[in-house]
Length: 175
Length: 205
Image (cartoon, rainbow over all chains, first blue to last red; front, side, top):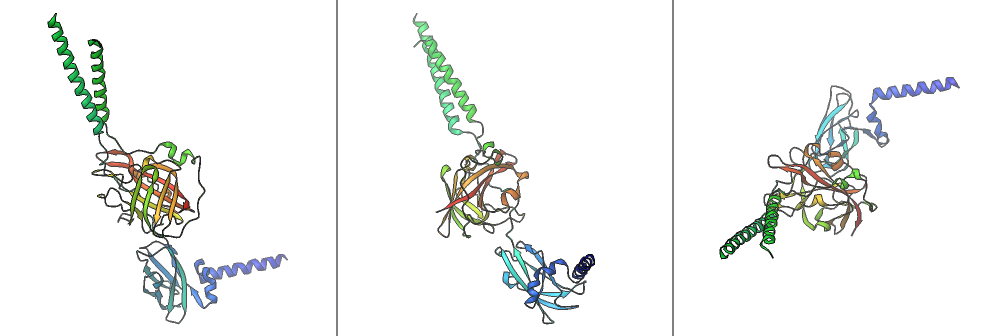
């Protein structure tokens, strides 16, 4: 039993190791695509905002291969995939257009060797950042109505004061 | 009435006049939300349950009945530095929404901005800081529906401490943010912060 368990563990490790060497984890995401004859396409970043540059790579085209990418689903046209310094993958780039609606878009690559690869790109809307500039202070200032009323009251008090003083003066004369 | 009491009356009037002039000379600034309207003070006594989000549709008009706001809506983009564009300052009754973001009523946080004032005086969101929890924000949409939001909180942030994630970040339900300037004004630096009203969808008409 223990040997059996060890055997299983060993096998699992070997499979994992082969998987790791043959393809980084991201390639394993689209195993179902392989069943339909597509190989997986690594899309980085897999979730992006308009204006961002997306890099895709795949093993499908083989060593020193070449492919043509199709990003028409989001209006980014076609792009070339060339073999990279990691000779076993081909790499290409495209830019997410500015006015793409948020959503998930399929990206496909047709290799010169006849194979195809597919992957998904999720476009998120870009959030604003920072505060807004929505005022210049044109509403900030003294309460002119109150100042006017105050001035009127002061003026009335002054007139009343003068009148009272003059009456007092004339009253004193009358005696 | 004796001359003495007339004299007193005039003295009191003079004092009142002086007070009016002095008090009225101090600057009036737009209303600032009180601490009771912040999230930290807890939810409103009566909080309506969230309504199911609507499919996206552009907003055409926004109303805040409690403060007599009734404004058309324009689409806003982002400035080169990533901040939200604002409506043209010349129009005192015009608000905008972030056109590449969530539309009011759809799932997520719809972003609305408008001026607190312009060079001529108060503008569309002058009274935003006077909103209270439970007040309603109504948005007419192109699809003919009206999304009704309730105010969850009204907060004020210093410009340099604006919480991007809290205001612009993703949410699980249909929400709205209404943003304007506020939080103190200096002639040298202008408004020192932003007032943000947070709301969530409670109904559709």
